[in-house]
Length: 548
Image (cartoon, rainbow, N blue to C red; front, side):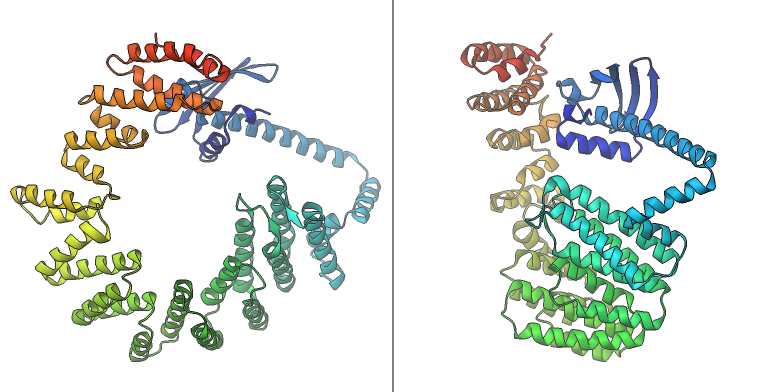
């Protein structure tokens, strides 16, 4: 195994590069492997092995130049591992085929019978291959197989930890991808639906560390299977499926999985009989929610339900008058208000649209995101109908308050004025912007580097320095070098792990590229070697710093 050579996030990025086929020009000679990885640039990777053990890795990317094992190296190693595994699989397939071909029929049958008698999983799969009818006993065997997977990974505490979650999900996926897919291929739709539901409910109720999102993978596969079944089944089975979905919007699975069931119900049952049932279901649900405790979440969910009802009314070709009346009855919900505003704009009832937008801003004043949405719409509408003064006022409100410091809105406001007028207007903006806004972005846009350097120097840490170094380095090298020095010295006061010291050494390397930087770094390192001589990890990382 070679993964231990890399940090976890670097491994992930390397895997992404490999998956997206960004490894090429692979050349192997003796114990040396050379390859090109196509990132922001072309990077050359070289790997040296000794008896299959990696003895050296190199890459010409900046991250590797700092003494780190990079994502490009990882991408090449993933590529090599995949090729080795592919060759091993090919050899195994060829050997297996040859072995079976050479065996007599009686031996093969006897061996297969022994295997199938002792492995219910293979027995189920074999019956699927033969397209046999699926009996109630077969379904019990499938469910027992699924239960055993859960029991094996969850144990007595009924909890699947992070270490076991990936393998657990992989086994569940295997049933979905193989057994249930075979049922679909054999047109055994009812059985496929029942087994998919069984997995969906059990996974939804299983307590586990799902940091890698395995539950989401299973849910997506279940939804794809459901949709395939709905595309092929007759109306009788479709009615049974619809009833199952409706009956399971009862809290029997966690919220986001219930959302998936709702998505299927409202997207995939478009026959008239189901439309009418969905209207009844929604009306009951809306009535129930309206009796509940008022909260932002309750209001949002109600708005989504009302909007769904409107969409069904449209699919059922209800009259526009009825749809608009229903919208007006439910304007308290932002989703519905937005929907009705669009209706008003489309039929050029601009006066009503403006009234609704202003009301929306007032009613949502405690929710900045809602106010921003209405203000953006109002600004665009004013511009569209030629209300110049109102357009400018709304744009000023956006730049200074609702979306303070947004670069695109700032540029839009700037486009209204002449260059001479703008010099005064921008100073008004700079003086009134709240402290949390990114005024540095506006200074960069305007080329006000004398102000930008002050923001960078007075900022915490090096984030802004890294962001603007390309612009400011040639103009203010001394100021940036001093910022680096003060930051790295502050970092050194705290004893920490090797990763922290590597970061410090990386900063020193950046400093060394400034005029007078090498001398400054040499002085700092000399001081640290005396001051922090009892930190072996720090001393080890400093030895990797070459200033020649």
